[in-house]
Image: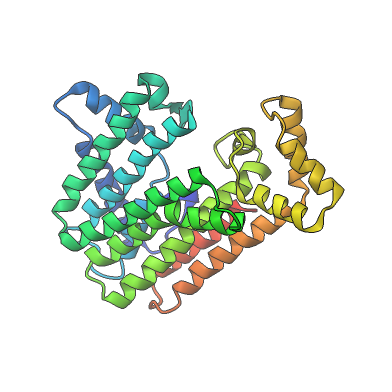
Length: 336
């Protein structure tokens, strides 16, 4: 039984495994081809993150969703390439906004070549994704455009913060639906669409992808605080140190405002202090790890996972469905 895709996902059926492995290999070739330019420097910059690897979470979902139709249909692999190119482009832009120094274990593009080159390389990837997308038909273009609008809207809403009177937790979940859920949903949608599934199956898989995408990000929020760094692939408390409001912190602040407990208020004050100080950062991390807000964040993650699992109920029983359900189990495992 070979392991494929993110989280060590296992595929029990040999025929399905062969299909998925072949599809993922074709996507990898497609990514390298799509990021080539007549200008060698552009090729180097555009392939920087492609060659750094990654989970290829979204292309894997395209391949699995396509199993409910014709997985060999000509649009399946190109649509997976489009989704991954779009995701990669957002990473270049995110690293500029976040002033990140490392991405996928390598120096970030903005550090290596500067912000301007990183932003323009992201734009180049968007252009190449659009070029491939144009061959997939007007419906595919519309689906991608709507998802991209949601993705950008989510990013803007995150930057702007919640409006007056808006629950910060609800605002954050809406942000994740746009920033993360939208593109994961499109991955499932494209796999189903391009393989010729009927509208009911397309809708089911789209709902699954949206919910799984949000759950995946919520699991990352929990990992940032709870992990030792090996599983998350980044230094624990990175979001905390950078002042990025993740679900456990938002739940802590909501609890402090609602209950007024001295220990909650004190922890909020600690989080508002300078967490570039290693001692303060270690203390904040230690106290959050035993705080009820972290366990609540885990429960919320599981709730989204269970919603994703429930969305699959109308689909016929098959090995691809089992694999999609296993992805739900993997996200729960990540959240502890």
